[in-house]
Image (cartoon, rainbow, N blue to C red; front, side, top):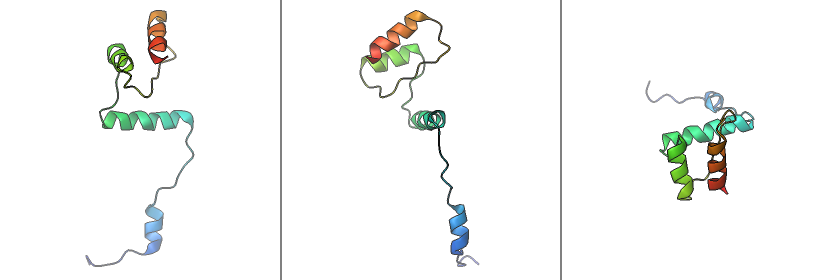
Length: 79
């Protein structure tokens, strides 16, 4: 039984169907992969250090951030 061959039709069904991603879905995937590979920095302090060292490749600022000083700092470090 261990030497049984799997029909090609079953293999084709196992292949994941590619679905179209929107921007938010793509961003979620990128952030998940960064978290898995220890490349995600969270919080103002960690992000400011990464931006200051110029080691950051992507910076996301939440829309609901109400502190204008935080926004100014992050935008200035990104520039």
